[in-house]
Image (tube, rainbow, N blue to C red):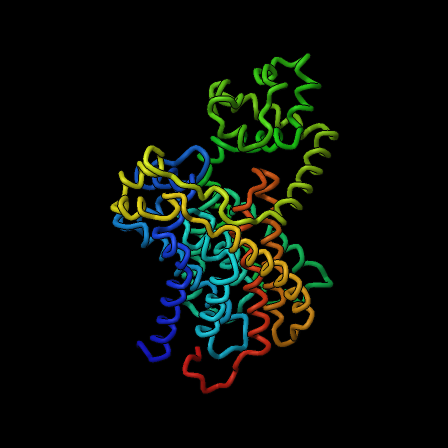
Length: 451
């Protein structure tokens, strides 16, 4: 039965979703990235790309109603993230008005964080916070409403399959939760954690291997070799081994690209393409990678590089990286015209004209917000009433751990890139708002918004 309270909550969710679209409204079209082109191609041609799963491409196809308009896809992304934020306030606070407070939080995040940038961008990155939040809500929230639980499991399954990094992030989170729950010192704190549910979430996580196996098989050797190029490990290995091993890439050991991006995507100069491409180099690259993981000195180099790259990624989250103009003559322009009805709107967008110049101002704001919020959040974790709201404390700690795992996985296995951290750093001010509202928000019983 539709009650006044339910109508108000739905209205709040709808308004909050529109608020998160403000960057897209300002631009005149959802923000795009070079990868948007590949997602469009995979989703509308129903073909798995070489370097990513098909899931987000299919999401675009379905939510845009077969290419009717990509605005629907951007709105659906905002609605999903707003729903997740609403559930945080519903299950991890003592508030009687979770919809109202979630709207306040969204308005704050829209003004002072990176959230409206990624929620209004046609890129799978928005599903990284969705997968972390949906997992942790299912683990640490108590008395979840049946409908919310069904939707959370659906969102977790969907978001887990959106990006290859999600599988590893979720696996690390689940293993960490299980590890701490079995330690005698922490055992009591994890009394709400259901082992059966953890097993179900682990199986869903591992199901991503089947969904992403094709893309992983085609690309993992290329991405990690790019990481070895950027860290100098490949050059060292080739210098030491080319005299005795007949690797084709030895010809290019003194002219390797300076970074992973050039190694991966410089189609004219990278040795990858001079040697025949991703498929042709697979056997040789895998052999080199495998050997470096069997020799102690190279294992140490891998670990040192991973630690340094992770630290760099944690402080690398400027907006606008890759959000350049893709005018007529580019693949993205061609595919928007081929697969959707949005070409005229796309051509008139600020980004297409090279006029999307919000980066510097927004960066200063969101950088301050993240660092200031992180400081206050760490302080706030110590003042949470642990007896009344134990699950909020655990949830907050593991959200921060999920953020760390995101940066570690992306920086260690792919490359350090601003967008990998941009997609999750807004979670820090959200945690702070949750802690503040939980402590000082209105809790009177006669609220008309009460759930």
